[in-house]
Length: 235
Image (cartoon, rainbow, N blue to C red):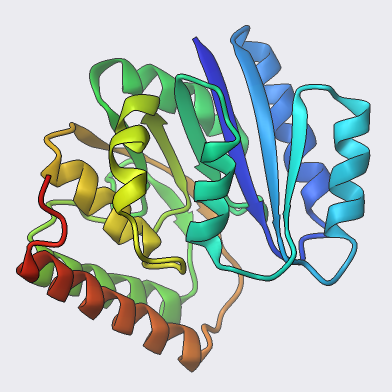
Protein backbone atom coordinates (compact mmCIF):
# COMPACT_ATOMS: atom_id res chain seq x y z
CA UNK A 1 0.00 0.00 0.00
CA UNK A 2 1.08 3.55 -0.69
CA UNK A 3 -0.52 6.40 1.22
CA UNK A 4 -0.88 9.94 -0.08
CA UNK A 5 -1.60 12.58 2.57
CA UNK A 6 -2.92 15.85 1.14
CA UNK A 7 -2.69 18.98 3.28
CA UNK A 8 -4.46 22.04 1.84
CA UNK A 9 -3.00 25.20 3.34
CA UNK A 10 -3.98 28.85 3.16
CA UNK A 11 -1.91 31.31 5.21
CA UNK A 12 -0.60 28.61 7.55
CA UNK A 13 2.98 29.86 7.86
CA UNK A 14 2.95 29.45 11.64
CA UNK A 15 1.53 25.91 11.68
CA UNK A 16 2.43 24.09 8.47
CA UNK A 17 5.88 22.97 9.65
CA UNK A 18 4.57 21.39 12.84
CA UNK A 19 1.70 19.76 10.95
CA UNK A 20 3.90 18.17 8.28
CA UNK A 21 6.54 17.05 10.76
CA UNK A 22 3.86 15.39 12.87
CA UNK A 23 2.32 13.66 9.83
CA UNK A 24 5.75 12.37 8.79
CA UNK A 25 6.45 11.09 12.30
CA UNK A 26 3.11 9.27 12.50
CA UNK A 27 3.24 7.70 9.05
CA UNK A 28 6.88 6.69 9.45
CA UNK A 29 5.73 4.72 12.48
CA UNK A 30 3.25 2.70 10.41
CA UNK A 31 5.91 1.38 8.06
CA UNK A 32 3.82 2.07 4.93
CA UNK A 33 5.14 3.76 1.81
CA UNK A 34 3.84 7.31 1.62
CA UNK A 35 3.98 10.83 0.27
CA UNK A 36 2.84 14.12 1.77
CA UNK A 37 1.47 16.69 -0.65
CA UNK A 38 1.14 20.27 0.60
CA UNK A 39 -1.17 22.39 -1.54
CA UNK A 40 -0.52 26.08 -0.92
CA UNK A 41 -3.82 27.59 -1.97
CA UNK A 42 -2.71 31.11 -2.88
CA UNK A 43 -1.27 32.07 0.52
CA UNK A 44 0.01 35.63 0.88
CA UNK A 45 2.23 34.89 3.88
CA UNK A 46 5.28 32.62 4.09
CA UNK A 47 3.43 29.31 3.79
CA UNK A 48 4.95 28.43 0.42
CA UNK A 49 8.50 29.19 1.56
CA UNK A 50 8.14 26.99 4.64
CA UNK A 51 6.58 24.24 2.54
CA UNK A 52 9.49 24.37 0.09
CA UNK A 53 11.95 24.04 2.97
CA UNK A 54 10.10 20.96 4.20
CA UNK A 55 10.22 19.42 0.73
CA UNK A 56 13.96 20.03 0.48
CA UNK A 57 14.45 18.37 3.87
CA UNK A 58 12.31 15.31 3.08
CA UNK A 59 11.97 13.81 -0.43
CA UNK A 60 8.61 12.31 0.54
CA UNK A 61 7.16 15.82 0.84
CA UNK A 62 5.91 17.57 -2.30
CA UNK A 63 4.57 21.09 -2.72
CA UNK A 64 1.93 22.28 -5.16
CA UNK A 65 1.09 25.96 -5.41
CA UNK A 66 -2.07 27.71 -6.57
CA UNK A 67 -1.28 31.31 -7.51
CA UNK A 68 -4.74 32.38 -6.37
CA UNK A 69 -6.87 31.25 -3.45
CA UNK A 70 -9.26 28.85 -5.19
CA UNK A 71 -10.88 27.13 -2.20
CA UNK A 72 -10.33 24.01 -0.13
CA UNK A 73 -12.10 21.72 -2.58
CA UNK A 74 -10.03 22.89 -5.51
CA UNK A 75 -6.84 22.49 -3.46
CA UNK A 76 -7.69 18.92 -2.47
CA UNK A 77 -8.56 17.93 -6.03
CA UNK A 78 -5.30 19.35 -7.29
CA UNK A 79 -3.41 17.49 -4.59
CA UNK A 80 -5.18 14.27 -5.55
CA UNK A 81 -4.26 14.70 -9.20
CA UNK A 82 -0.62 15.05 -8.18
CA UNK A 83 -0.75 12.00 -5.92
CA UNK A 84 0.13 8.37 -6.61
CA UNK A 85 -1.09 6.49 -3.53
CA UNK A 86 -3.74 3.79 -3.67
CA UNK A 87 -5.02 5.26 -0.37
CA UNK A 88 -5.56 9.03 -0.18
CA UNK A 89 -6.11 11.02 2.99
CA UNK A 90 -6.64 14.71 3.53
CA UNK A 91 -6.52 16.73 6.70
CA UNK A 92 -6.50 20.35 7.82
CA UNK A 93 -3.17 22.11 8.34
CA UNK A 94 -4.13 23.75 11.63
CA UNK A 95 -3.62 20.60 13.75
CA UNK A 96 -7.10 20.89 15.23
CA UNK A 97 -7.32 17.15 14.47
CA UNK A 98 -4.04 15.45 15.45
CA UNK A 99 -2.42 13.28 12.75
CA UNK A 100 -1.83 10.43 15.22
CA UNK A 101 -5.41 9.35 14.49
CA UNK A 102 -4.46 8.32 10.97
CA UNK A 103 -3.45 4.67 11.74
CA UNK A 104 -6.94 4.00 13.17
CA UNK A 105 -8.49 5.34 9.97
CA UNK A 106 -6.23 3.18 7.81
CA UNK A 107 -7.27 0.12 9.82
CA UNK A 108 -10.95 1.05 9.49
CA UNK A 109 -10.52 1.46 5.72
CA UNK A 110 -9.85 -2.29 5.43
CA UNK A 111 -13.63 -2.81 5.70
CA UNK A 112 -14.75 0.37 3.94
CA UNK A 113 -14.15 2.56 0.88
CA UNK A 114 -14.23 5.88 2.73
CA UNK A 115 -13.56 6.75 6.37
CA UNK A 116 -14.66 10.15 7.64
CA UNK A 117 -14.05 11.77 11.00
CA UNK A 118 -17.27 12.58 12.81
CA UNK A 119 -17.72 15.04 15.65
CA UNK A 120 -20.91 13.18 16.57
CA UNK A 121 -19.40 9.73 16.87
CA UNK A 122 -20.02 8.52 20.46
CA UNK A 123 -16.29 7.97 20.99
CA UNK A 124 -15.21 11.38 19.66
CA UNK A 125 -13.40 13.78 21.99
CA UNK A 126 -14.09 17.33 20.90
CA UNK A 127 -13.54 20.85 22.16
CA UNK A 128 -15.77 22.94 19.96
CA UNK A 129 -17.08 26.48 20.58
CA UNK A 130 -20.86 26.56 21.14
CA UNK A 131 -21.52 28.76 18.09
CA UNK A 132 -19.71 26.35 15.80
CA UNK A 133 -21.41 23.38 17.45
CA UNK A 134 -24.87 24.82 16.76
CA UNK A 135 -24.05 25.85 13.19
CA UNK A 136 -22.52 22.45 12.46
CA UNK A 137 -25.58 20.62 13.77
CA UNK A 138 -27.98 22.83 11.79
CA UNK A 139 -25.95 22.44 8.60
CA UNK A 140 -25.90 18.66 8.97
CA UNK A 141 -29.67 18.60 9.52
CA UNK A 142 -30.06 20.45 6.23
CA UNK A 143 -27.73 18.02 4.47
CA UNK A 144 -29.72 15.04 5.69
CA UNK A 145 -33.09 16.66 4.89
CA UNK A 146 -32.17 17.84 1.39
CA UNK A 147 -29.84 15.09 0.19
CA UNK A 148 -30.79 12.05 2.28
CA UNK A 149 -27.12 11.52 3.01
CA UNK A 150 -27.00 9.16 6.04
CA UNK A 151 -23.98 10.67 7.77
CA UNK A 152 -23.88 12.50 11.09
CA UNK A 153 -21.04 14.83 10.04
CA UNK A 154 -19.83 15.75 6.55
CA UNK A 155 -17.58 18.70 7.38
CA UNK A 156 -14.85 17.25 9.56
CA UNK A 157 -11.57 17.87 7.70
CA UNK A 158 -10.08 14.41 8.29
CA UNK A 159 -10.99 11.81 5.66
CA UNK A 160 -9.41 8.75 4.03
CA UNK A 161 -10.36 7.22 0.68
CA UNK A 162 -9.47 4.25 -1.42
CA UNK A 163 -8.10 5.76 -4.58
CA UNK A 164 -10.70 4.21 -6.85
CA UNK A 165 -13.43 6.24 -5.12
CA UNK A 166 -11.79 9.56 -5.92
CA UNK A 167 -10.94 8.45 -9.44
CA UNK A 168 -14.63 7.74 -9.93
CA UNK A 169 -16.11 10.93 -8.50
CA UNK A 170 -13.58 13.78 -8.80
CA UNK A 171 -14.44 14.57 -12.41
CA UNK A 172 -18.07 15.18 -11.35
CA UNK A 173 -17.26 17.70 -8.62
CA UNK A 174 -18.41 21.29 -9.09
CA UNK A 175 -18.04 22.89 -5.66
CA UNK A 176 -14.70 24.50 -4.76
CA UNK A 177 -15.34 25.75 -1.22
CA UNK A 178 -16.19 24.17 2.13
CA UNK A 179 -19.38 22.46 0.93
CA UNK A 180 -17.02 20.46 -1.28
CA UNK A 181 -17.09 17.69 1.37
CA UNK A 182 -20.86 17.34 1.03
CA UNK A 183 -20.70 16.95 -2.73
CA UNK A 184 -17.78 14.52 -2.55
CA UNK A 185 -19.50 12.28 0.00
CA UNK A 186 -22.84 12.47 -1.82
CA UNK A 187 -21.20 11.26 -5.03
CA UNK A 188 -19.40 8.47 -3.18
CA UNK A 189 -22.61 7.39 -1.46
CA UNK A 190 -24.62 7.43 -4.68
CA UNK A 191 -21.81 5.50 -6.34
CA UNK A 192 -22.43 2.64 -3.95
CA UNK A 193 -19.22 3.04 -1.94
CA UNK A 194 -19.21 2.13 1.74
CA UNK A 195 -18.67 5.18 3.97
CA UNK A 196 -17.81 4.63 7.63
CA UNK A 197 -17.72 7.33 10.31
CA UNK A 198 -14.87 7.15 12.81
CA UNK A 199 -14.22 8.92 16.12
CA UNK A 200 -12.17 12.09 16.02
CA UNK A 201 -10.16 14.07 18.53
CA UNK A 202 -10.75 17.73 17.75
CA UNK A 203 -9.54 20.89 19.43
CA UNK A 204 -11.15 23.78 17.55
CA UNK A 205 -10.67 27.12 19.29
CA UNK A 206 -11.73 29.61 16.61
CA UNK A 207 -15.00 30.86 18.00
CA UNK A 208 -16.52 32.82 15.14
CA UNK A 209 -17.43 31.96 11.58
CA UNK A 210 -17.78 34.84 9.15
CA UNK A 211 -21.36 35.42 8.02
CA UNK A 212 -20.13 35.47 4.42
CA UNK A 213 -18.70 31.94 4.83
CA UNK A 214 -21.98 30.65 6.24
CA UNK A 215 -23.95 32.14 3.34
CA UNK A 216 -21.54 30.65 0.80
CA UNK A 217 -21.87 27.19 2.34
CA UNK A 218 -25.65 27.43 2.30
CA UNK A 219 -25.63 28.63 -1.31
CA UNK A 220 -23.36 25.75 -2.32
CA UNK A 221 -25.56 23.25 -0.49
CA UNK A 222 -28.63 24.53 -2.36
CA UNK A 223 -26.73 24.21 -5.64
CA UNK A 224 -25.82 20.61 -4.81
CA UNK A 225 -29.48 19.94 -3.99
CA UNK A 226 -30.64 21.40 -7.30
CA UNK A 227 -27.99 19.48 -9.27
CA UNK A 228 -29.09 16.28 -7.54
CA UNK A 229 -32.70 16.94 -8.60
CA UNK A 230 -31.80 17.64 -12.22
CA UNK A 231 -29.82 14.43 -12.63
CA UNK A 232 -26.45 16.15 -12.93
CA UNK A 233 -24.90 13.41 -10.77
CA UNK A 234 -26.16 10.42 -12.71
CA UNK A 235 -23.53 7.80 -13.40
